[in-house]
Amino acid sequence: MPPSAKSDGPLNGRVALVTGSAKRLGRAVALRLAQEGADVVVHHRSSSAEAQSAVAEIKKLGRRAVAVAADLSKLSEIKRLFEETAKQFGRLDILINSAANFLHTEFEATSEETWDASLDTNLKAPFFCAQAAAPLLKKNHGVIINFADVGGLLGWTGYIPHCVSKAGIIMLTRCLAKELAPEVRVNAIAPGTITMSGDPPELEADYIKRAPLRRSGTPVDIAETVLFLVHAKFVTGQVLVVDGGRTL
Ligand SMILES: NC(=O)c1ccc[n+]([C@@H]2O[C@H](COP(=O)([O-])OP(=O)(O)OC[C@H]3O[C@@H](n4cnc5c(N)ncnc54)[C@H](OP(=O)(O)O)[C@@H]3O)[C@@H](O)[C@H]2O)c1
Image (cartoon, rainbow, N blue to C red; front, side, top):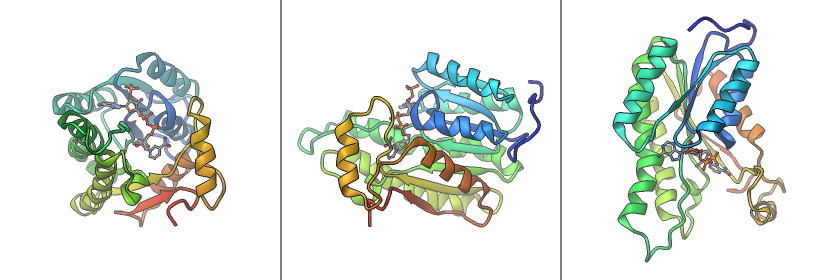
């Protein structure tokens, strides 16, 4: 692929892969990294049209971008995603593990399928993405940012597999930070409720009551935190809780 048309920006020449970046938080993060100069792999599973529109928006910023589809619950597809990244860009500097599901399941009704679906996508996939990315990231002092959730700290009824998967992400972040040091830094973000268009308004109203800062988060809050962690060169193995004080 030819170099980016635009050469300004602190992340110019770097390549970022953001899982689940066709829509919502992942997309906001992908666009923000592109604004900072990065070329981007827009990973998605089923949202192909949205992924193509994210690619078009990134290209308008003068950056290179490709959309790659993969079901991250399957190891073979994870391997293909990183092979395709290496083929298209020849390097990887930033891996953002954002893709996840958010499955509600009452304790008595929780099935093996729901348990596996939560853990496979939310915890197993970020591990194997990190494993597949590590050889590329190590070459350039790269960065991994995992998405946890305040549910991985607080624990919610009706969401045990989800909360366990996100608690696992916190420990995965610490283990990977040690495993991949000193070449690669690994951190996590644990967002509170982030409000986006289409989300039920009662979700935001409930959060405003509970969070000391009296608001829910925005995708910009998360994208700015990602940028902070990308640039924070002495920070590794940490979980940054971005929740308006909800967990205090
Ligand atoms: N939104 C919030 O308020 C909030 C709060 C706390 C934590 N978080 C965390 O922040 C991250 C982003 O949140 P979000 O709300 O933007 O996420 P989301 O909309 O629920 O999911 C993001 C993307 O993940 C992809 N995905 C799901 N299962 C997949 C699989 N098996 N293989 C590949 N891709 C898969 C989907 O891609 P396709 O659409 O292409 O299928 C989806 O668009 C998640 O890790 C989430 O747990 C979010």
